Image (tube, rainbow, N blue to C red; front, side, top):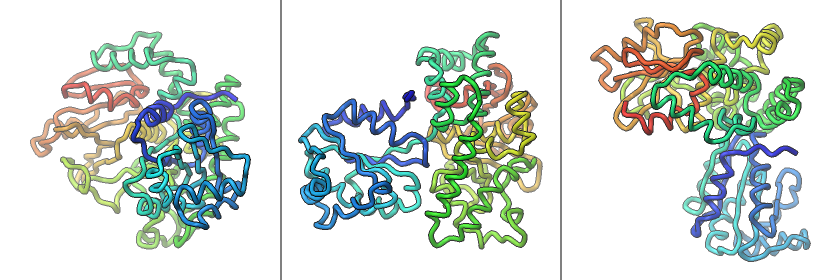
Amino acid sequence: MLYLKRKIDAFLAEWKANPDRKPLIVKGPRQVGKTESIKRFGEMNYQSVITINFVEEPKYKMITADGYKADDIIKNISRMDPSKRFIEGETLIFFDELQEFPEIATALKFFKIDGRFDVICSGSMLGINYRKIESNSVGYKSDYEMFSLDFEEFLWAKGYDDAFIEDMLEHMRNLTPFNEVQMSVCSSLFLDYCILGGMPAVVREFIVKGTFEGSLEIQRQLIADYKEDIRKYAEGIDQTRILNVFNHIPVQLAKDNKKFQISKVASGARFRDYRGCVEWLDDAGMVNICYCLNFPELPLQGNYDDTKYKIYFADSGLLVAMLDEEAQEDLRTNKNLGVYKGALYENVVGEALVKAGYKLYYYKRDDSTLEQDFFVRTASALIPVEVKAKNGTAKSMRTLISSEKYADIHCGIKFTGGNIGYSDNIYTFPYFCAFLLKRYLAGANI
């Protein structure tokens, strides 16, 4: 099977190189490639890889019967399967589907103290019961959050190397427009990525076949799997309400005002009845929540209204799979990304920001038309980020930059279908550069 190079590969190599490494927990939504990447890393770096999947083999939940010490657990694993080889310094123990048995996290402390074997845990839906895992292993573990492929990983899958990506970043840094060939190639690749999303199963199918054939079926199956997870793991919250919210995201993104309104989810729905549903989807890694700032100023943390938000899908391919038939046809045949009033562009840029490590915030002033899609920050400045379907005027952004009211804002960034440009303190970049924003800002003096 075609292996897709992922960012976690480099992280795992660094983790192994650290002599003081702690047991590692890899979290992330289902089907983003966690198990595949960890298993491949294990096979390439250890003489023995012991994989214990708590969903496929629930009998292994008994391994803590004699306690959580490393020796006790190893003895019990060996009793259940004598063929598993524990070689000191050369063995990776991989606990998969951790969400089914979060208690095993208590053992991580003892494995770290013991020090003879490396341990990696992984699972989807971990955010849901992460507090329990955290309290059981605090101070004795490292964490890594994995997402579906970002555009950089998609470029790797298509055969492009780091030099190609570095060249894109140089264009941004020097504000040098891309030539016609570069614009055409990058825009075309980005269109494909938007339609597919970053789920490995979808991307792999596309790379192998070279067409979109079968991609929609895989995307729809993923949606069905996500809904199944909601039914299986949502405890203490009404599953129907969570499903209602999930199903309503595309509809609400299609509006001019993309703010998510609970009242539109079901007749008579009230915010207080749905409290926890949106957070549940966020914890499960299915969605990205973009909160409305109380005022566009630093710091961002704590400066937002948790009752006002927009909801985006964590993977744009899932949004595509939930579009109606006509929009599907328009998107795949005509490559028209303007469907749903630019919702797809916004979703893709929001997704790129989250995958780069940003939290999402927007601003809408109640008493005027002033509205801003996203904000990111540097050490000393707040930077509004606009996503334009066409290269429009960005009136709100100009107001934020020029008004003395907004002291933390000196310039803005606009993502459009056009080329690189700069005027009136607004930096314009093509959509396909969104994944590079954090790297660009780290080296830019703006």
